[in-house]
Image 1 (cartoon, rainbow, N blue to C red):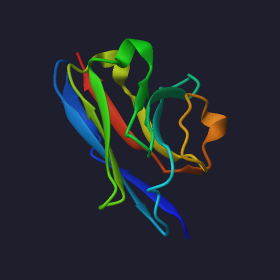
Image 2: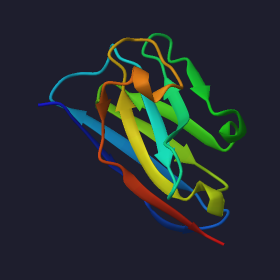
Image 3: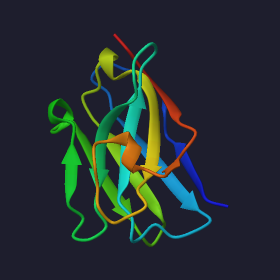
Image 4: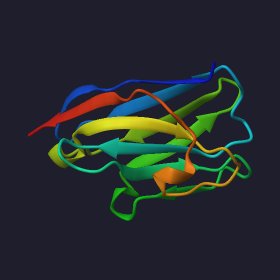
Length: 124
């Protein structure tokens, strides 16, 4: 059974940092693209960042690049999202996702496996 389990969310003041983790189990995702998405209350789920298996190339939502950084540790089957200079508008449930291929995409329809999400709340 494939599972993606996010952790590291919580309550943080504006300007603070959080590091989210996504641990995969049930199979290895070393050959798969991995992504992070988020969903704020009343809004659609949106792309945050993704990382390719081959070469570790990355893509980001334009306005998040520079504050957020995605990385992966294939030995641990884990993907990370480092979030710095957090703002109240970053408040959302953050989801980890795995693509069925090595490619990466900002389109959530291109991802096959999803975690249950972790809540990030940024207070002003």
